[in-house]
Length: 547
Image (tube, rainbow, N blue to C red; front, side, top):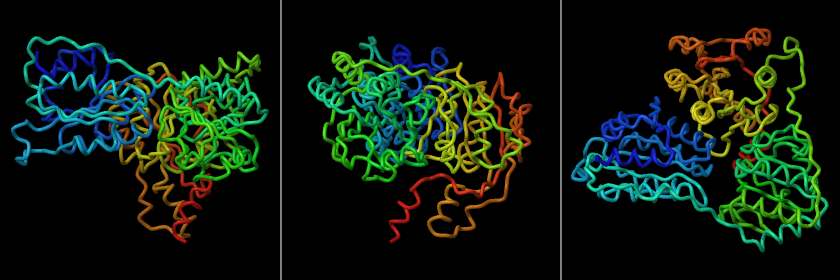
């Protein structure tokens, strides 16, 4: 069996359904063998960077290993941003890159690049395979590293001659095994004892709770403590729950800032957050001030990074919460079960309000299904989403504010739709992001994916524009461009498109067009919003470096 075929068969045996990437000379053997492995569908994108973000979303919303592929040289380097993001989000992705034949290494071969050391800083494991006999052994090792303990991306570079080599007497190794970090039972007991002693506390959750929302809710209801989320954790838990007070950090809510800054709560229980810049509102010291701080995480490097932690608990987050809940229940603590009101937002007459970003986003949510998942790109609209849109269902938002690559939301919507085909999926992006990865709407068309792409077109880099206005009281002329009709671009691809330029355009009749989609649709919102976006203290933080 050809090594490339063996690779694909092994991935198929371990549940891989899609490979995201672009075919090229140094990986042609793998793509050719895909003809004979119909269980794996290649998602051929328009740019490898988008492929990496699709793989990230697929891994996130399936909680399984995902695979992304690129050629040697530029194909591999185009994957790097996605790998770095996956490292930040703890997403298990196998990145495969091609490589020139072993006997060509060092001879300035076409697209030659030693990718292994380049990927090392942004992956858990990176290796160049030098013998076909080692290929599956290395793939198995890499995949187990990716899904185990602290999940994250891994990388394997496979030379072209290795892909084409014949493997004799082949047999599949054992299936990929996942390991988790078990929490220390003594530490869990200490946490339970402290929580039972305190009447007032705060549960502060980050993206690490994405698979543990029911446990977080049960814990909050046992303690009757408020839940505060970081920006990237917005939407993991429905904001219709009475104990969810909102977002703290970038574009967060006044209520959560008041709770943190006014000293409410004697205990801060941090679950699944590394307490980074955007999560803590620029490392606000009031977060832990005069509070006994407990931090539960599977990543030991997050403890005592910026904040002193009184009681760190290392271990798988879901298992840690399960054990903690058992300890609290043993004490006789009873749970007050709150009803989740999965209701729509409060109705208002959109024809009477100002045509601005806040109102257009709320109108969109008013008409779209409650269960809709929103993939949010990077721009001034992102701050409005965090601050004003409401999470009505579980995992209803994907917001990538911590790594913040423009255009990632477009690819995320595609990966999310492939992961959960029955869930209504909407991408909210801007013209700046669209000009980076907007051609992926054609990928959505080619794979017949019913996604609504909402493009807020203000003909400028809006977040940069407002940021410079607030920080320097001036902007550079290059931040603004001549307007381009993005709906016309979509129309040229035979993708249904609509363009609105007033609140009156954004009406019930238009929104009916987005029910029961048969493929992608583009809704362009032509809007220049001169209101200051709700970015919180982000500008103050940036301005502090100029003093």
